[in-house]
Image (tube, rainbow over all chains, first blue to last red; front, side):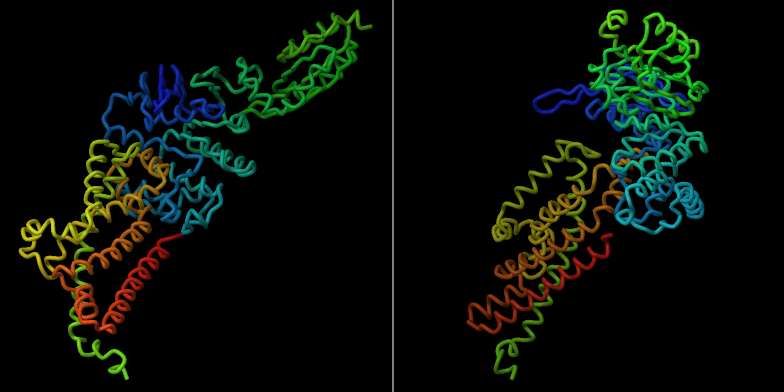
Length: 344
Length: 223
């Protein structure tokens, strides 16, 4: 549905050049909720603005719905844009007109009949849960409400794609969750493809089915959310994941443990099983739980455990084999500081 | 009692009324023309500036330079410098008609800059949001920039009109008529202090009324 190929973009300022995007390749399929995560300055905002050509790449191709956007004229581009919704960190509503008019503006521009406009605006207001704020002005609304208006406005042209540029970054955690739920609901109800740019892993893990991790203008890894989350390949990917599951704070103290530390990732049914006490009794292993967490990623339940395993090496190896047989991912975080036999 | 306090004002009251009418006509007509020509130029300055929707360095710098040159010419000199142009447009260089042309020429660049200052305040993020919805540059100007900037346009026009009142007084001294001419002739040259004082009060009142109307509209448009 969206295909970016070999996209590069360099910004020239007076005294330096900034390579914002460096040979980016990205495929977003119809129906995806695609997350792009990275720290500020990674180039992700430039990336999302390339999709509707608010920013033109220096090289590469941008294809949306089979249309090569760099090969069409301004008028055709405007037509394409009118079917791509976009929401922003700062909401970007017009403060001088009320909520109703904000949502109606793009409809008026398409010269729809006033009756049609009215019906459409009412529908959108009820979709985003703001029917009672129809005649309020944006300055009278909270951040979350403003973003809801912006979502309604973005949806007014029945877009097949919704671009979200740090749409929850200016919101508190509760409001962020409610906006994410709304986006998910819209996705499920309207079958719309969503691209989300964010620096919050929280956002990605809540609703995305696919994710790309960006650093210094490059996509360092991308894939299915569960794969990236349970088995991040890049340093920055691992950083985001440990921030998201909250293990970051304990990871600092790993040096103090003498035994080997493992990260165990369980999927689906296994998350409900008492697998730790099983290895403790079966393999005579002492399990020291350092960190534990259960997440729902998109539609999959993933349990993460950081454990220090103390026991005979062959018992530990057998226990890990047992886990692997349960479709559990085992990752060695740190090897034992000395062999077990010398410790006892 | 009034006749002992402001005897000359009473004696020259018909002349004063004429002068007041002349000033109002000068300010209204030249204000109207300045706004009609100056606002589009101000809009052009904003949208052709760097990074804006119709960014065009050449157009922007030419417009900007013309405005700077016109604004740096002192108004009295401007009046004296363009009589040929004035005669071409209105057929005379004196009276209210002759005053309006230099007033408009002086006020257009002033209005244009004020409008530019008013409209750069319109959030580029909002402009971008409407670009992303497929609005054309013209649609963005009329449906976004001018709507979002309208309350600041009101303030800009208010300030410009008040500036025009000052300029209109200067045209009086070179044959333009109006309250400025009246105050200088009777109040200053004939030492009729009461005329000077009352004229000043009238001008201050006009300024207050115009500013008041501007502020009122601004508040109405603010949310």
